[in-house]
Length: 48
Image (cartoon, rainbow, N blue to C red; front, side, top):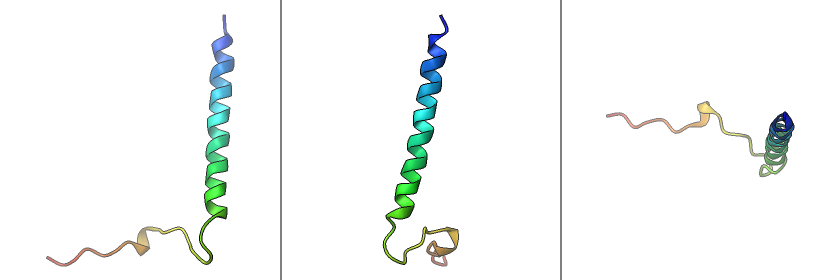
C-alpha cells in the first residue's frame, strides 16, 4: 500500500536532476564573454 512513496521519491529525484542539468546547460551555453546579469547591471530609473 506504500507504492506512492516510490512514485513521489522518483518524481522528486527526476525534478531535481532536470533542474541541475538545465542550470548547467544554461551556464555552458552563455554567449562568449557574457556573464549572468545581476542587480548591479539593471538600468537605473529616470529621475522624476
